[in-house]
Length: 146
Image 1: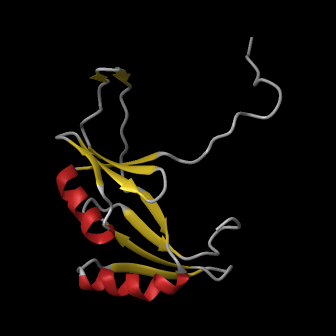
Image 2: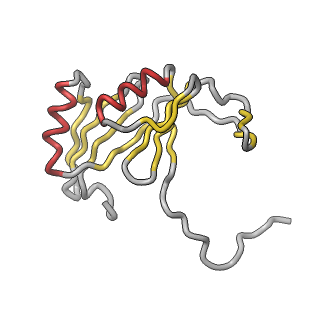
């Protein structure tokens, strides 16, 4: 017997709270993201660095092997998790700041891998972090709601 979804509208999801990247060295990744974006440090230990993003969101930079097994915390068990390969994050920027971001990346020695002009008028800059994750800065118009 298969359980079916309850009828009616689902409860509200307010926003994405956390997103994670899995890195070789959380301190190195933390330094990169703080140097480039200025994200404040929310928490760090040997397993991870947590950076506060604009709005109520956090970027978690987990050491690749930190949670291959469940982890005990004072409040309960965190299930095992992880990610492999080169992941992707996109940060929303104002169109007026695109040239400033391009100059900042160049000044900080972060190579721009690609620049894309999208059909809705948005532009994106693509580059990589020290763990080869693909990062994107996108101006409004990329998606129907942005």
